[in-house]
Length: 358
Image (cartoon, rainbow, N blue to C red; front, side, top):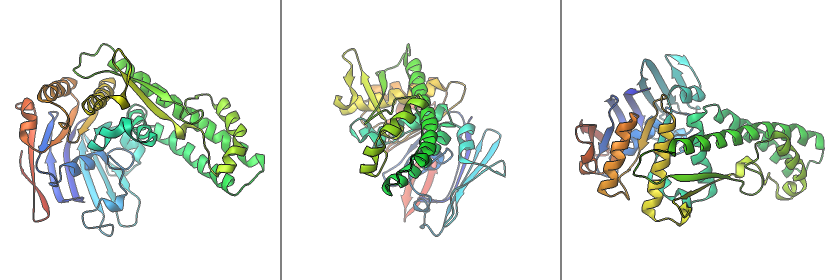
């Protein structure tokens, strides 16, 4: 799939914006605060969830939560609209028909890398879990439904635990749901990790391959067997009741990463190597989706990369053929893409972002 038209209305810094694109990479450059990242965030909203910033819809409107916003796009032959009206949940329309966020995930696969993710390997496990789930969602759009089903059952179980309900019948029903959905979540995650490993094997790349592992966190977050999960939840009821919440399960999973012949933990690597590892995973993700035509969103991607690695990254992006949107503070950061990409200059004047030229 290719995103060929993008129209924003009252989204973040953009009162109105229209962009036409093709299969070539789009290099967006301009000073900080000009609205570059807002363009990428808008594209990320063409996928399930809260987008690359994880923001609530009311926080994305240009003039506050009482205004609302709209994003319209053409993805190949499909017309897609998503909008958030004041006080309403986000709406999705595909070809003028009401649709779901899950359907967006099936229509176009979106992969992103943001500066905040540079801290992924030293951040809290929750951030790595979200990163893994985004990888998984790119392969298995139904992963979102499995995760939502697990979370819903867990919230109900947590309510019983807080109220110190002791009737085992109530717990058995909820734990059966958690076990079924949790096993699916874990299987999806393990499948995504396997696909990334296959995509990295034998790839000619300037970026180091990372060996990924699903870590159990506190408990059994790596268990794909629903019967085993149900038994473990039942055995842990007393401890969970004392804590007032479910202490173990797929919601406590973590993502481990090592690289190089010495199996260096990613958390102990230099800032530059951590960035390179992330890029390696993003490229492997896109490579594993060959035939699915993912869209790559790479925000401030040149940070922590020298000129040689930037050039290598751009070569790999062009070789992948995946539509890519990149941001940076100046056009010189994308010099190695000259003649192979669309260049979009953005400025911000009098509190209004505007396009100066492509």
